[in-house]
Image 1 (cartoon, rainbow over the protein chains, first blue to last red):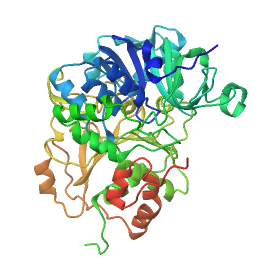
Image 2 (image 1 turned 120 degrees about the vertical axis):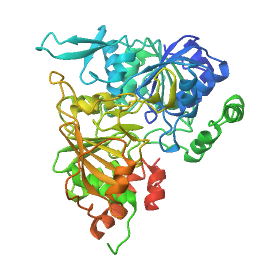
Image 3 (image 1 turned 90 degrees about the horizontal axis):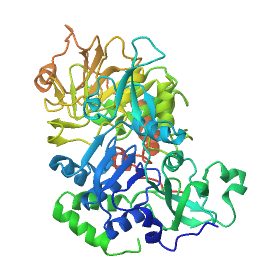
Image 4 (image 1 turned 135 degrees about the vertical axis):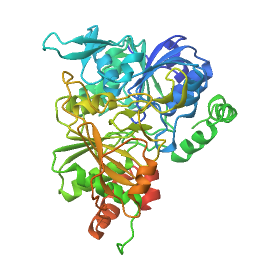
Length: 272
Length: 249
């Protein structure tokens, strides 16, 4: 029988130092409460894969010194400007960066979903991204005639970390339209989810909910984290906290300001 | 001179809406409030067509198979128009969303390539936009090619750039070169030459960009702006004075 985790800290116990961790894009249910818990625990040397981009989550983890390698198509605070800790780390070379393009990350995770070693992808030929990705290969398509095509090795994360509206007591997690969360879970060896609330009954028993449900089969741990995406939004349920994001952008602009931010909002365990 | 007043953003959105043309599906990526305004304007004018997919939206996005569905759609040729910007754009239509200086030790780091290194190749009409028209942004040669403006004959490439819209003018793109197509009201050809780092074709006469009509402005301000506020609340508030409606739950 599936055991719901007693706390967020319990749920993230399997995310250890050196873990390859895949996280969703900024609008798909970002587990920010769990991210703050990881920083408080002092996780180190993460290989962070953002599917396919990230905003404040990657910036926080980088600034707090948790990330060794970052694989992403972009990190930005969107309307609140550049991601300051990402930008600083890139310029000073303190993280290893694997620059990608969005569909390449989707495709590389899809390869793992299928259990195949690589996935071909159009585009990319002639982009400088290829120059710095010696793990990406260009071959002549065996089904074409003088048709160069890029092969991407499968990405097989250790853990997928997601946040969603609800889960049941069987470990099933309702992700709705956020199907990339399912791709992440299928590709990763384990999935850790935080949710807004526990659903009474079995999500798979209701045909209206079942199609939007990630089966507990893939899920290692579930913990309740109310407003667990804050200060980012949870699509269909709550919007991002614009005031807080602006405050973050302001504080994280300098190393000192970022340290103050961590003290105020991450190390001081707040209800929010 | 026109009698009614409009903002730069409104002019640019109107120009972009005109470039979209008669197509089935327009997709808009991250950090693209002006193209999003244009796409929604085109949809209003077409009474529901083209289909519009705003990548970060809930309401203006019909995808149900995750973020990958957009790219799969585009790979099949089911996305007709897309928009790209760049920290640098050069005269060959190459786009740089990564960094200036040395890649390993950059002078300026941008967010990253997003979907450009794929969508630029497979979407037939890619409209480039850059609201800062300067020698810093429009350069002779980009420092990093996130996505190239053109490809060798054997590279699969049904897509690519058709135009570049800036705060000063509209360039069209063909045969691997930009051509000055129109100059926005209040700007001059001399000023454009002065502020453009790459060479471009200059026809003997270049028209002024037509300003948005009062009907277009009304549609944009009253119908499009409220729709925009979901994805671009700051932009909608600053440009149109519209604030985001609270979520239903």
